[in-house]
Structure formats: C-alpha cells, structure tokens
Image (cartoon, rainbow, N blue to C red; front, side, top):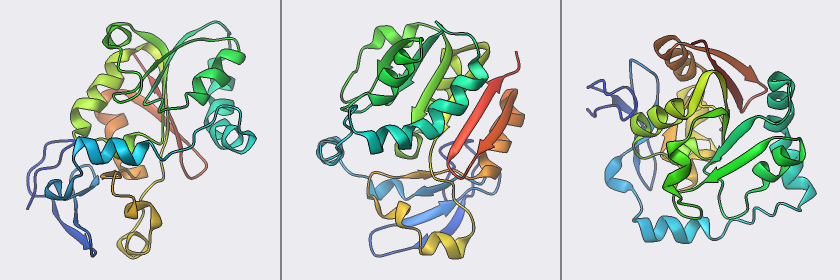
Length: 213
C-alpha cells in the first residue's frame, strides 16, 4: 500500500508490475503512479531530457503542440494576455507559438529555465505540455499550477491519458523512465470538482481547465 502523491489518500493499491518498476493506483483520485523507489536521480533525469529534440522551428513539432495551442487560443479570445509555459523544456516552442498569436509569454522549467521570479507572478493562462507525467510530487506541482492562474483563467495541459489495466500493460507511455504520474479523465474530473474548475477534454491528450472563481 502506498500514499497517493496527488490527493494524499492512503492505501493506493498495486496496479501493474513490469521489468523495471511497480505501479500503484489511487482509489480516491484514480492517479496511477510509479513506485517512488524506482525514480531516476536528478542527474539521470536531466540526461534523459537532454536527448529531447524540441526544435521550435520544426513543423511537425509545431503541429503536435498546436493540438493544445489552437483550442486554447480560441477560448482565450482576446489577444495580449499574460501567459506562462510551465515545463517549457530545452526548446520553448509553445511559448513562441503563443507569442506569435499575440500573447505575452513567460517560461519556466526546473532544468532549463529555472527563474523563480516567474513563479511569483499570476497569469491569465498557464500551459503545461508533456510535463505533468514527470511530476514526482504532483500534489505540490498541481497546487503551484493552480496558484499561478488568475480567477477565471485557463490551465491548458497535454498528457496522454491512462485508461484500464489491460491497456496500461501494453502502453508505451509508461516505458519512459521519467514518466511517473499517469492521469486519467477520472483524475481530472476529481481535481476539477475538488478545486473549483471546469474541465474539457479535447481529443485524447489535451485537457483544458478554467478556474470558476
């Protein structure tokens, strides 16, 4: 039994075991998470991220990110809003795309753009693409993300969503050793109800949440 790192409920049950690590599922918020004992060191994690090729000028990568950028900008409506791309990585392509759309963007990444000053601001919207699955302490990071968004503002996420145990056993997404927290629609509905958010699922891996107050 494990304590859920997102909702802090005790008694998360064993969910899956592979050659590398064990996974647990929370009965309260449905988060699936990897055994904390199997985490990489910060140095190993950083070395893995250095292999990513997130080129802001790559058309394919832009099309991938546009699956979040387009529906988010449609809902934002007015231009020149203040946004933050959290977990921007070594090539902050999404912030560039949203700047091109007329918004004023800041970036933050614990390895590549660790400027604490940007975390002292509040934003009309915050994006977090392919990063939330890396959160070792998602309760803390989720609270941080929500605290950065102004009342009425938007949180735009991109992460692949977990489904059932059989699909999880064959899921390539879990094989990345830096992926440790796996969210589902059930998880985001739980968070939306708990934290006063409206949630909308766009496709299979884009989640838009709006603060209701």
